[in-house]
Amino acid sequence: MSDAPLPPIGMLAELTHRCPLQCVYCSNPLELLKADKELSTDAWLALFEEAADLGVLQIHLSGGEPTLRPDLEQFVSCLARRGVYTNLITAGVGIAEGRIERLCDAGLDHVQLSIQGANASTTEKIGNNRGAHEKKLETARRVVELGLPLTINAPIHRHNIEEVPAFIDLALSLGAQRLEIANVQYAGWALLNRNTLMPDREAVERQVEIVEEAQSRLQGILAIDFVAPDYFAVYPKPCMGGWARDAFMVTPDGTVLPCHAAATIPTLHFERFGERSLTDIWLNSLAFNAFRGDDWMLEPCKSCDRREIDWGGCRCQAMAIAGDAAATDPACVKSPLHNRMAILIGEANSLPSSNADDFRYRRIGRA
Ligand code: SF4
Ligand code: FES
Image 1 (cartoon, protein in one colour):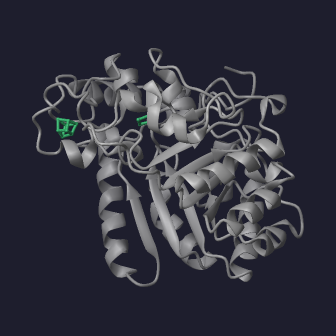
Image 2 (tube, protein in one colour; image 1 turned 90 degrees about the horizontal axis):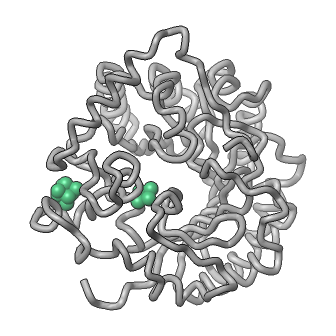
Image 3 (cartoon, helix red, strand yellow; image 1 turned 180 degrees about the horizontal axis):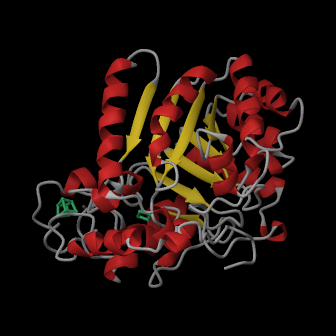
């Protein structure tokens, strides 16, 4: 592929790494940034203006917990003025009275609320925060009362995979429009906790049947998205829709990345907004061009008829498991390393039950 890249459609803005929860599957990096490293209000506003100029149509305001930024209303209002669709990705804990109303007034378009368990004990155990579940339910009610569309995001792993039917009931009872049953991606803190989070094959198969039945039963009532678990897959997902193809992300200090785990690829160098413009990074950065399109591919991807469907899978998973970011994602059945996935599942599932809850909780400064 040698044509100039098309403009990006989406951007994930990690406004802060601070968060009241300590989820063991968090996709943030192990080296979490402290508040003093975060971009200023003016820098984020300049970045959002340039993203809109570049052609970005939707921005996911995320973290950490984005509502910890007191300037969030200014960001939403700037993006609304530029006609950019805004999605707030929140843990829904500790949001002050009147805040969601103010964000709604500023022009917020959508809320995505993560819920760690369908019941309070699972939510509190995974996020290490007592009382979190009730606060999340209250946030969901406030969002729906305001008429904002609500998506419930349920990250799935060994400790809540049997709660999938209850997650579906919960999303219905809360009046959500969409439910994401999202099997955990093993990057960041989830990779560190992989052995305690990995489900077994039988549970995954039961889950697929439950989701497929609910998707057909609830058509027109609740949209259910299913993010399949890579380690049990035959073919990989097109991670981020393909490297630097239609989306990118920005970390709290303004580093511009093609995906949330890209910084784990040691051969790549990523620039910060301010050192270089967003447009220049998107078009010309060596890191963004490293795996764009299919010119970089080796066999078996190079001659595979799925190469423009999944774009070779996830570069960061190839790095983590194959030790080479240019390798075929080992989630693919055609990868010579595909059997490593089964070995890793087996290792995780043979963990003694006494270690089942041996979590390493996400915490700034704990890497
Ligand atoms: Fe995708 Fe590469 Fe596997 Fe083909 S060989 S299915 S392009 S990961
Ligand atoms: Fe980086 Fe998938 S997380 S390409």
